[in-house]
Image (cartoon, rainbow, N blue to C red; front, side, top):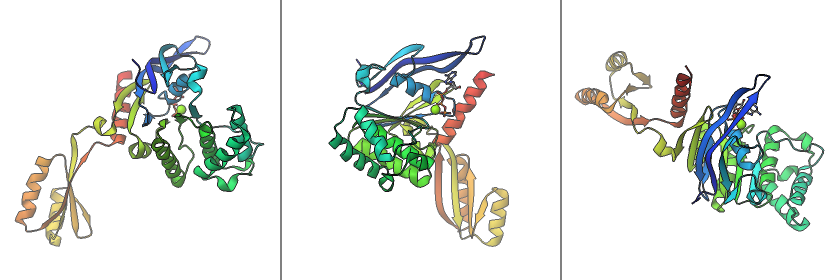
Length: 313
Ligand SMILES: Nc1ncnc2c1ncn2[C@@H]1O[C@H](COP(=O)(O)OP(=O)(O)OP(=O)(O)O)[C@@H](O)[C@H]1O
Ligand SMILES: [Mg+2]
């Protein structure tokens, strides 16, 4: 029984390239379920198979194996696209139109009335921060503006499911923040947002759940907190109140770094830090902070990439 609003089951795509028909496994096997009302990130390095997975789910290419569905309809079926909004990777928009004309065209293709189109276009241009560019020709748009207009277009049909392929690509930090806010708003309105990216801070900031792809295979899926190893990777101890001489000694013996009149020493475990803490107390110096750091997404990402490289040897 399908419960996810987006489902993929063993979904894969293999291309035959060149004269000899060399096989390229763009996507090996993807099984996932996106729940209604969540922001779900499909994360992986260049060439991992993110766009392939998205194109398969949208029915833009045919799968070599597996199945998928959107909103209970088989992927690719016209009904599966009725409540779907899509922003492609590097959108190419009709250059000779203005922003308003472009949204008006999208709206008529969706079968919306002129009145709805005008109201929605104004609202969406405002939402994506293009209110000032309503009547500007798209050929005069910057890359970030094109990306924003593409996002507005994806929302014209008032979709229940929004699929975005690299929505932050080409955006500066302010633009990325704006797009994040739009994604939060879509979720607050009860829509489901499924997007691909390799910009890890964005993933950490906004995703309810993520799937990690590496070389066409799913390596991890779940809430970020659950995926990242709980193992403490380092314990940092910050100390103040040492004399200059004591500071020098600690720096040398503990390969610590100085920050003003503080010293920060890093240890591989809490046990390793304990000895130093005892020493600090004996010196009557002050422990300012003890922080344990856990694995972050970037480290998990690198760990998986290294494993994929190792497996190919
Ligand atoms: N039409 C095609 N013919 C042959 N190989 C293809 C085709 N489309 C994609 N590939 C290959 O499949 C792999 C996955 O491509 P895909 O575009 O899905 O990656 P991606 O994760 O979206 O990468 P990026 O972050 O660069 O957008 C790549 O090795 C790519 O070269
Ligand atoms: Mg891609």
